[in-house]
Image (cartoon, rainbow, N blue to C red):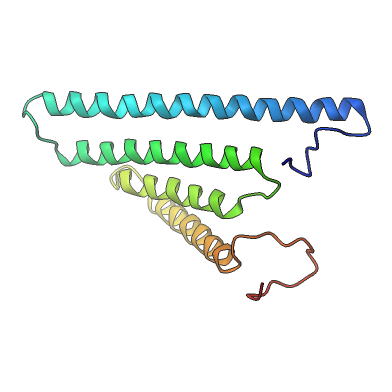
Length: 160
């Protein structure tokens, strides 16, 4: 199944070629994302090993734990991005709900690793506003079943 926006065949041969080139580029991005995921997992294992094998042995301080959580979240975000790419390649529906969930996860990672000594009040307010906006957007798409309207003039309703 192909995106309606990027059909493999087009009346204009140049446009058809460009659509196929873009789809190939997205496939390359998918392969690269898988490599990034495995690299990130290896990095998490290495950092954990390094921190646990240095004195005091088998103990992590709060900063180590927060950095570990951040590294885990980065891997999960990379997996979500791969899923976004996979869905983009495999369907003709934009996975808006998944994109919003990925963005929420990225904001959650930022909040988890946030060092309050290094950020200003304005940055915290901005992060809060982004979190609220993404949360409301996710809730609205979840309420609608994550489906995009085919007719933009037709009002949203909870009925299928």
